[in-house]
Image (cartoon, rainbow, N blue to C red):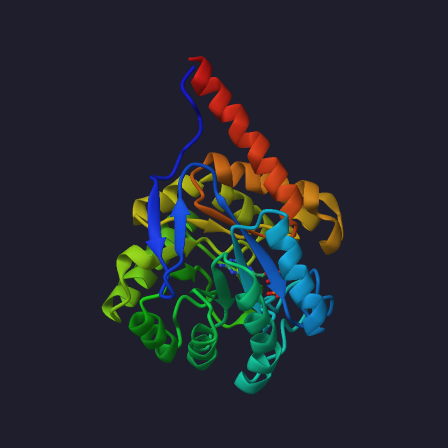
Length: 299
Ligand code: HH2
């Protein structure tokens, strides 16, 4: 029987600080650390820097390949989250982020990503030892594009449309896949035009950002279409509201649904999955990969 699994091409991506992101076979696990009072599934849990550092260490101990530190919630407005996340000024984002980033940098070797839309925040985070930038707005801040280009760090460009506060209102795609792939492709070209190296770019379909529950399912179902962009694909489906829509489960109780999405993403060539539940995801992917390998070994 032919394998139904898409495996991304092995590849090493260098971070500005000398660390490497090695893509080979199963997806890497990026552990989410939200240093916010209002994130959709864990807001307020890791606001205290001591607890946040502990949480980061715990995720690395559980097998996270990278950490993603975010100090501004980006839950979209206009749908189930009402008006969406509050705007966070640069000073506040840095006040939440830097003490935790600095402590973790001193204690873990895995690459640390900063989840921000702002050039000033990324610049300070990279200076404090962050290795890559994760931007849900795909470098809409020209200053962020400049910082990423100058540092040479890897960057995640995520698909979304419109302003966060209104994103879940009047969602319309004529051709979902073609438009998401096309708009992500334009984001890649804009980044390259701003002197970001193509080799440093990850793309992400933006599950939950300006999409209906069905559109989120379709984007996962047709994840392979993103490979035409030639960039490794990151998927952030963990605990997202489409799982709640399907199952009725609250945001902090969506592990089963998250693992289903992760399994699908893994089988369709995702290079990285962004998750809140690192230990369960690690176990899931280790067994998933062992099953795939056992088949090949036997053939
Ligand atoms: N999703 C969230 C935040 N950042 N980054 C990427 N690349 N892809 C995603 O799907 C993604 C992301 C939302 O999740 P979370 O950080 O848990 O929530 P909040 O934005 O409310 O802090």
